[in-house]
Image 1 (cartoon, rainbow, N blue to C red):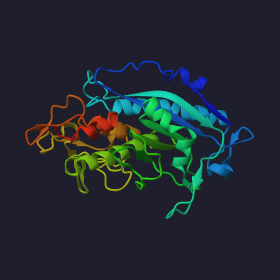
Image 2 (tube, rainbow, N blue to C red):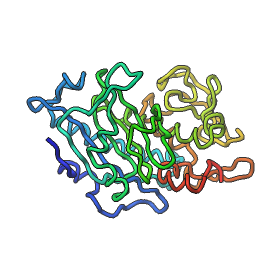
Image 3 (cartoon, helix red, strand yellow):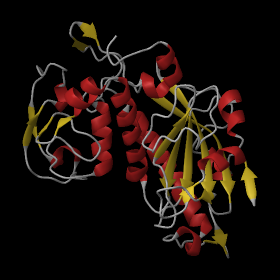
Image 4 (cartoon, rainbow, N blue to C red):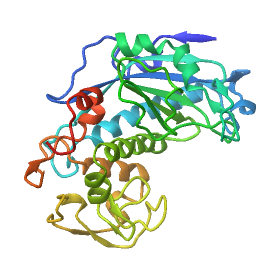
Length: 326
């Protein structure tokens, strides 16, 4: 069974299809398509398929709806430069849920070399939803794929295709997505989890793209290195000592809130209390410290760009050969 429309439960939360996007002046629109795979047996998600999800279909539908809303809010808030201390700051990204597609069947999979479990067949999924129409005619930039993991299927947290290649948190197989005239990114969410795990997919995509654009400025000078983190990254906050160390109570001095490439910013003594020991709060806080709109920063006398351009207008940025500095 297949339904292709924006479900009624989403209409009160998201803008209806084709509605003009109301966004802050200068913000990049990110038109997004939702795709859901709900394998169903007797009106419940079939655990024999998902590996770990056994719940009423309506409950999982509601969970994905609410989580999607939280992810939109987190990403837009995260794109607001120093939003935690500047009440006038505006987001650089504005998400528009254009439509939703639902399949009451398992994720398409295939055998892929090097993977013990079947791999999600992203190319088959994109062909199933007619991705060419959504990207080239409707302007979709992102696809949020709601599925499952459960140890029974392998996934990529993010996957990209387009005229500038695949720069994503995947194995960057150039043939696992239809390549079109415009770039689009597929994020694979797991409805056994919540908004933090979904947003983490985006954080890793941000890391992949910014490392590609300027490895030294982003990875060496913004992120830092083990034992001498500056702003850190998804798994490691400035006081991080191991993966996923979001609850570390150790205090460190960091310039994350006044980051300058040359290290001249004011340092502050912080620990996990700064983000309430919460992974989602850490992700939003970290994103808000990425150089965004009107950041006023420079490097070797050259102004820094708004780094969110690479997620709001990737093709435009690549065509213009933009860097993290002007």
